[in-house]
Length: 194
Image (tube, rainbow, N blue to C red; front, side):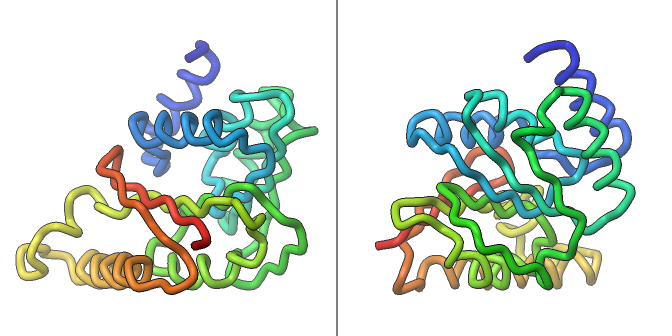
């Protein structure tokens, strides 16, 4: 990892910005390489770290990334510019639940509000190329998803865990997509049309 990228990563961690864990991001990078993915839609930009990392895989990768938090969006735009990736990463300031996109993508990466995973999956699945992939991060949610609910003190976290569990069930029972689950990083799913 180059110094600039390492600095962005460390600054994000210092500022409690939720960026993807190394193990999960490396898994995603390998998927992009192995499947020769060229067009990516990312839901949840944060400060642009994962988009920048994905863009560095190959010079012909194009990424559209959506962020609803204005401060993070502004920070992401600055970071993308700092890495000279303006021509390949297009950040959109919007709430993904309200945004309509016409383009088709080889990969849709869901890494936004965990309680809305199912909504994002259903909303954007028609933007997926026929042999494309939908990848979702944080399915373990820092180990909370495996815990009995009564052991989770925060009501908000319990609610999120329920939603993530429902999403996992939604993926397992989906008639249109088949999903593999990977115990890397914070838990990742990779879905593709049957």
